[in-house]
Amino acid sequence: MKAQPIASHFIDGAYVDDAEGAVIDVVYPATGEVIARLHEATPALIDRALASAARAQGAWGAMRPVERARILRRAVDIIRARNAELSELETLDTGKPIQETTVADWPSGADAIEFFAGLAPTVTGETVPLGGDFVYTIREPLGVCVGIGAWNYPSQIACWKAAPALALGNAMVFKPSEVTPLGALKLAEIFIEAGMPAGLFNVVQGRGAVGAALVTDPRVAKVSLTGSVPTGQKVYAAAAQGIRHVTMELGGKSPLIVFEDADLDSAVGAAMLGNFYSTGQICSNGTRVFVQKGVREDFLRRLKARAEAIRLGDPLDPDTQMGPLVSQAQLDKVLAYVEGAMAQGARLVTGGARAGQGQGQGYFIQPTAFADVTDDMTLACEEVFGPVMAVLDFDTEDEVIARANDTQFGLAAGVFTADLTRAHRVVARLQAGTCWINAYNLTPVEGPFGGVKMSGVGRENGRAAVEHYTQVKSVYVGMGPVDAPY
Ligand code: NAD
Image (spheres, rainbow, N blue to C red):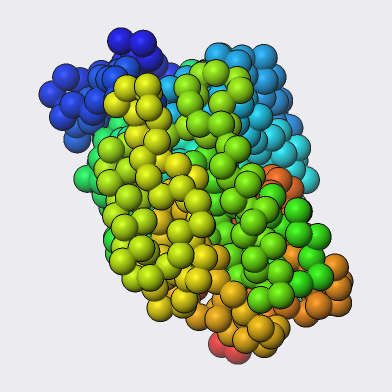
């Protein structure tokens, strides 16, 4: 099998397997071919992973941050040197075109490790003078953190969670999505090669039950999940039983608002990136595109022409611009949303059908856009997670802000306008954790990323992530005799 790893799991510095665990077949989405066969972690392996993390964390957390950083920086160099090979594996695991994986997936993961390696040595406490006595604070690691990933950016997600956790002195047990289990194993391998002590980053494979076993283990101090809202509700509730810290990076139905004065080609380009990149499988996608009525038809004309020129095909061909969806289940789900939109009266602008003649059993679908979508249509309310853009129209600024906010989600939002005062005014009123002005879906590691409302709790990336992988110890220092009343 083309992408078979040495073994299913990586625990305490080495690959391990246990054929007792249920089988996980890894399917290449472009052909339907099984490219690797793994096993779910058994309770004994989950225990080994947590025990090794707990064992390794003490010395790692006590190490000078610059020494931890040096090891992480070596891992960054290894990732960058092997980008071609790692990106090919990412393409096999996810079906995303090599054109994307070579610039977006591992490279953004390497950026995160580099950023947090640089940041960790600057993390300090504060001194609070009390006129003689004083308080000082120490930012301590949390301990053993659990990371649980989604399948859309498997290696980036592993890096985004491992980077702050490890740089700030924690250990991590990471469970990738069962749909895309391969990349995280490479990360674990690379950390060891970079000189990281064994046990600090362990990978265990499995479906939801393995994740649930990790979340409820008393050795775990924190859980960081990237996944859907329903999973987030379960994981958050389970973590609450142990009063564990959480970061929840969940789903969205984000608005992208295009005013009449916007640079229309840029707005169309951003809407396409925010709906079609990674075959639409991005949490922060601007899947409700609100276009002001005066430019709606022009917007749709340009969108249709550009969408129909998108090159679908073999993801390993560097000229391919769009690959398949990740799985048969995802294809079925997305096609059902497309049928539902037609049944509810949305106007099909482009796409709408399976694609990929000659692509074997691949899970290809045409880039699709609907116009005349109304707020109550299913397509405007639920996360599709496929290349299906919903275009809605609007008249006024107040109206569009109210409609943009009328959702349980709050992950992201975008505004296109030439009027900068309007851009800032609108962004100030949008209920979203991450906003873009005249841009969309750019998530550099330097900027915090995360959601409000049902889209999440906590932030990844940026300095903000330090808060979520450390805890504050307050130390009161008495400088004089104790004044006791008895
Ligand atoms: P999912 O919720 O089905 O699964 C996410 C992960 O949780 C998987 O590893 C799964 O095995 C695990 N899991 C499932 N049940 C569990 C349980 N009870 N306890 C512990 N772990 C459990 O999500 P998915 O289909 O893999 O990914 C798509 C979703 O992820 C979308 O909703 C998308 O918006 C979201 N997402 C969010 C972000 C973000 O940063 N906000 C990024 C990427 C994806």
